Structures are given as C-alpha cells and as structure tokens.
Length: 67
Image 1 (cartoon, helix red, strand yellow):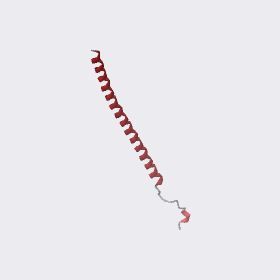
Image 2: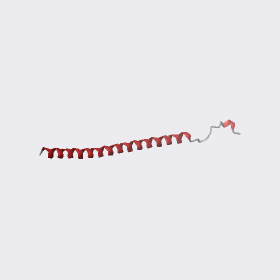
Image 3: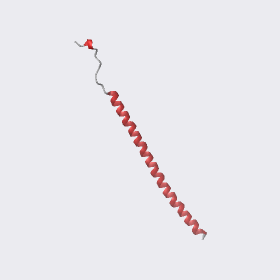
Image 4: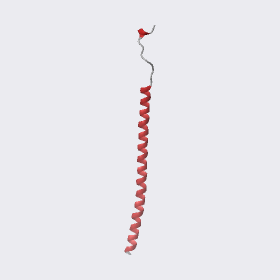
C-alpha cells in the first residue's frame, strides 16, 4: 500500500515539474519579446533623432554679401 502512495506522489511531482517547466519557458519567451520590442523602440527613436539633426535646411548667408 505504501508503494502505491509513493508512485502516486511521484507522478504528481512529475506532472507539476512539467507544468512548471512549461510556464517558465513561456515567461522567458515573453520577457525576451518585451526586451526586443523595447530595443526596437529605442532604435526607432534614435533614427528619428538622427534625421532631425541631419536635416539641412540651408546655409546662413549674410544679407550684405548678396548683390
């Protein structure tokens, strides 16, 4: 009778282990996805800032030089 309890207890621990492993992998994957999205947003912001800085409207010309 005690062997049956050990077997049932072992099966319960095995199932809980597998379920926990599944949730751990899912959590790690979602964390990696959030990190990737955050990096993409930072890269987009950096590109927009570079575009604003590199945009040349024209050179300053002193009014008296033009004749």
